[in-house]
Image (tube, rainbow, N blue to C red; front, top):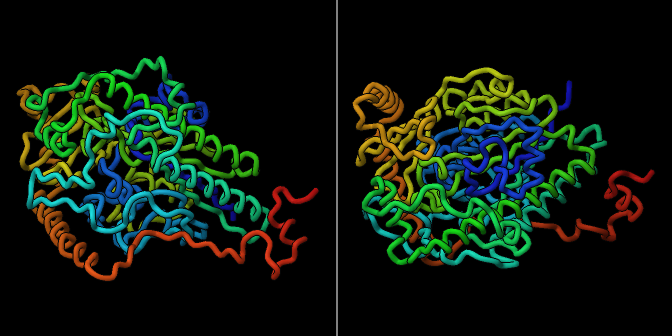
Length: 508
């Protein structure tokens, strides 16, 4: 039997997919990502399943929408009974490992990974639960605010840099471990997921990357800020959720925030380069599929909006690139989804998903990699902070449709209006298109039941979280453990054997 390919998944956080129309935009200083793009199949219109970290990542790992996973927000538990790509690959013989963030909420912090090399950057408990019973309430201690914009600038170390430096270091060490075992006939294929927290705000970057964007042509948003009263209803809610009245955002703040964001893409590019260089030097590159993706995007000040939580392109559209032996490079314009990553990985590894496909919302992208067409629409959901009721969206062909029971519908023609400036939902000329999308939405979602499920989940967690914090507290945050007595040289080891086994390549 032919050995299954190794898989390296590089995931980043909050990377705007409009900056990847065909690999990284020209103005970005990203030599390693541009080199990866040149040998990848690139999905220009790939979308998150939900534009927020925990729900988007649970959907990425499971191939299921939040309405199936029940991971509605950043404090909703991801159930251990939901199969992830790590479970599927591990069952097929893969060594599965995670270095970095995945924002699992609940006591299960592995979800199919055999090893986890770092803790997470965000909490694993129910403390960040929104409350639909109090629409408009800001939970100030954890809600986003625009301080990330006014505080943009240079720093040589930050909370997030410290985390991503550690994530990359441990991932490289794991690649060396796999290389040292690669000539063992009994070694397993591996899947290593390396998940960074940049370029997620705060927009703070190291000087060496900040200086790359001194004369960047993209520091000004393409779409000027829109007055609060002229925003659509959900964007108004996001303005309020982000506490916009407490901040005076000046043009220079916007330029500095975007500059810091671009700089952190270059910071990540160096990390990507280090990982790929390690694969090359350890002779594993030719046997490894590399998948590059993000959980959601960032509006970056376009029309005055920041961060995510929106179905607008800057927030919902994310990069996706796949490279490896037998994968022809090229551009795919057809709309696809992060929901498709699980079935794609399994398809590439020759794993049968028939047992769970009826409950999987994604489909393999291998046919699109081979030039075939696709007709299935892309589905998205959002039911977290800044919403007062669940929102859903459908991208089908040139159109995007957005529905919320408490808002007027939105319909955009992304071919003629890529910046989504003209809502066609009230245009009589598009009445048939609106009716088609509305029927598609009603056929897919019971919005009343969706709303009730979200409220029930929130209410339960608002009871459980304060109860668990009262008295003795046992955290769910993942604690990486190392056995010091099994590292480096110890007296129960043979020094000659140890040094030979830890060397790659072996002594000539």
